[in-house]
Length: 153
Image (tube, rainbow, N blue to C red; front, side):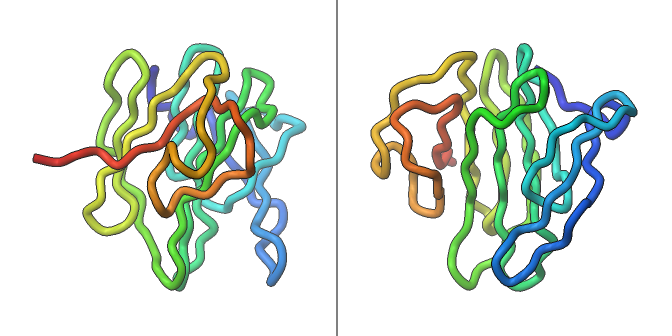
């Protein structure tokens, strides 16, 4: 697991957000455009995990910012996604650290510390009860990652 640089993984804005659609960006890997697009305007961080990418993007919205978390395969196809959002709130992304073999800690809403556990294959997850308030996903029973609030002592 490692944090990828802009030379290894980069986003280029292709369409700005509208009233009904979020912004879309094209993915560039190792300086080459990939025929794959992702939601978000700003790439906050990209983590390389085994043959996967975990990408954190924001939409560059000053009033109700959300954090898009997208899990891609080695060909940059979307496998799983979640969004951290809270009505009338805005967040600022800070990567806290990586803990081998598969944990990522970060902050987004104020001082809340979030943790993601990554999985190399889909795991069974109970929808709506497995993750804390503020995490939004499409309904699916299996996911490649799980988000939790990290307890801070």
